[in-house]
Amino acid sequence: MSAEGEPREELLCLVRSLRERLRIDGELGRPLSYLTREGEVAGAVRGERSTQTAREFPVVKMSGLDAVRELLGDCRRCPLHRTRHSLVFGEGNPEADLVFVGEAPGADEDAQGRPFVGRAGQLLTKIIGAMGLKREEVYICNILKCRPPGNRNPQPDEIAPCEPFLIRQLEAIRPRVICALGTFSAHTLLKSEAPISVLRGRFHSYQGILLMPTYHPAYLLRNPGAKKQVWEDVQMIMQTLRDGT
Ligand code: URA
Image (cartoon, rainbow, N blue to C red; front, side, top):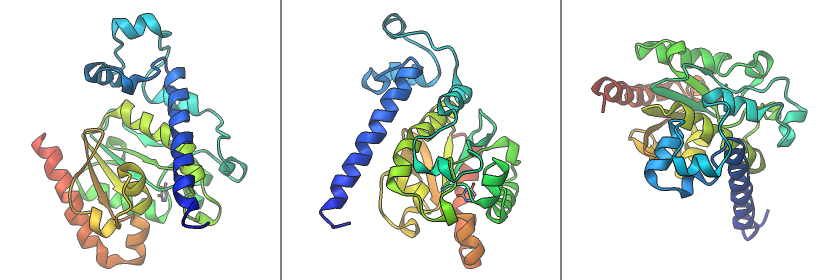
């Protein structure tokens, strides 16, 4: 694609993503929630509804992660549905203080329908253990819910329709800390294109939630020397969770 075509493609992706968010908000009974006053948005995130919204929009029949999973359904919003074996929604504690967001399912995850169960997943499980936590205590999901063939990088036209569901998952859980695993996760959540080596090592804000980018466990398998930096990053997360800040 030419350099001139890139901003146009980016804009198209943004429009697609926004359209999908509006559609999902509509189905959840809270259209244009981010255009309401701040208190109403916070209430909507907690599943509460203001009198005004309740009068104007239909009653929410389901709440939280189950509602998001229901909306996702047997998703065919991007071409990845043709090659996937299973859709990997995410798993863990729906009230987790800490959410890990990876890139996309790999072959093992696609086969089992669960996130981070292959070699990189086993390393993530060890990292979680070293933090003094169990896998069941945190929530684990990905930017993409379906495996890109051959584990290639996620494409903008795959991220755009999938991102609204991640946004809704994070809204439903409302964790204290998000740990973005790897470049694609950090770039998608932070809307930044800075290298992960620059982004990691400090907290950023995602919708008012602390977000720590760090190296992806698959990168650590290839570059074990980077484990030191990941350990520094997760120690900052642990300290924050301990402090209750
Ligand atoms: N890599 C990811 O980013 N996510 C998974 O679920 C597995 C491997």
